[in-house]
Length: 70
Image 1 (cartoon, helix red, strand yellow):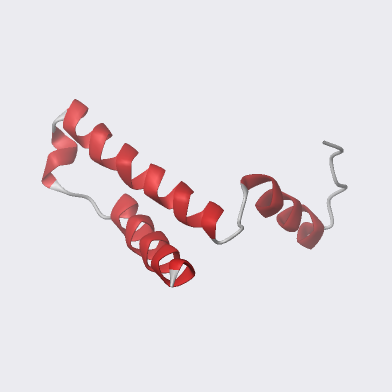
Image 2 (cartoon, rainbow, N blue to C red):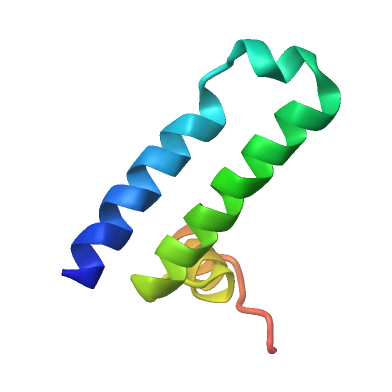
């Protein structure tokens, strides 16, 4: 159940970040709501086991670039 909630949250917050809205014209308000959507996306991705390090390593292997040692 938690994975399904995380998946739905990731999709909805990801879409929300890319859809322009009238509140984006007011700087502070626009930043706050998008910051919250980004935080929710981060929670959802970490719940699904997707971390930035894992995501970038996967892209490096696909592109054939050498891996960076962490």
